[in-house]
Amino acid sequence: MDGWMDGWMDGWMDGWMDGWMDGWMDGWMDGWMNGWIDGWMVAFPITLFASSLFTVSACVTQHHRLVVVTTSR
Image (tube, rainbow, N blue to C red; front, side, top):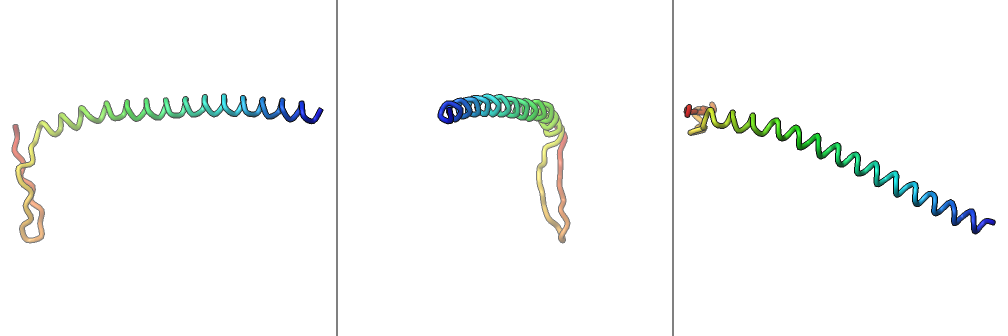
């Protein structure tokens, strides 16, 4: 009886843990990746648009001050 119970419990626990972990990891990874990609897809066009407005021509330090010269396109 002990051998049967041990085998059944081991099989059940292995199956349950594998299923739960696979489901949880898949769900978590899918959610995280989708959220990250969605956020990046929103931010990237904004970054491209902002960078298309101004081009940094020169960054020069004068007397401990940073002077950034920009030109419009």
